[in-house]
Length: 334
Image (cartoon, rainbow, N blue to C red):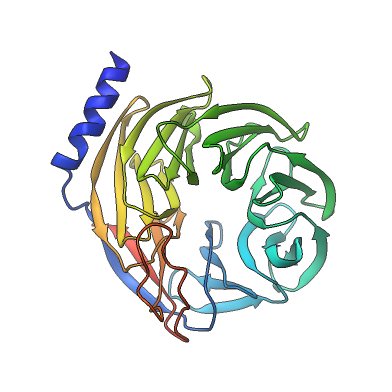
């Protein structure tokens, strides 16, 4: 019966979805040259960290003030915040390294070897470790967050994109080429389980409902896959926009978000851990495929810019960004 309900919900969702109760409340015109990648919120200080090609921008989420930049990065992608040690970590993908920086001054403290295509990066509190997800190397680099020292590299058996910490000693990542979720034991720094995301293909973005052991994987095939981490399996999929690259979950409302390059922000809702529905799609600029979410203020941050050529659907947002057109849209519940 559960599978039947899931299929009915997926089939019915596009027919009943309305405009979601979210709107853009502010636009922060940040400008500057370069493309962008992950937007990472720091709820404790209400700052957002944005990878911008050769640097990481640090922005006050209340008024859009540029607080500083982490410089000297060659191919900026993700940022991880280890508040307990006062350290931030940014992937420098083109030179296969991780830059550790001071969260107060944004100055570089160390440069740690990673692996080819170091992309997303996340912090796991229980182990006090940082995990970079190295796409072309099919691995994860593990770093001691306090010492800033390399622990090991974990072979993942596929190309990782984004991941999350469950807060219980487990880290999860999407493998895009094999369409799987891989589970990492943070303490032993080893792969403990994996499972397919089918019928989702090419899972990229990820968010988590840690309280209910549910993972949300945004897939390039135009669906969001919901996984049960205790059972180690995908339980349902729901339709989203095309070209997804960002995901978020608001535990206060039960809303799930997927930002898509086709000019939509899909909002879904968790009625129960086994029952989901599409709320609707909010129009966003073409190519706005990345988002950050602050669970304290419950604000969404979506990146946008004007491109030298129209940002296509699908992957999207890969055309050159026109100088000084980069901005962040602040989206909140009505």
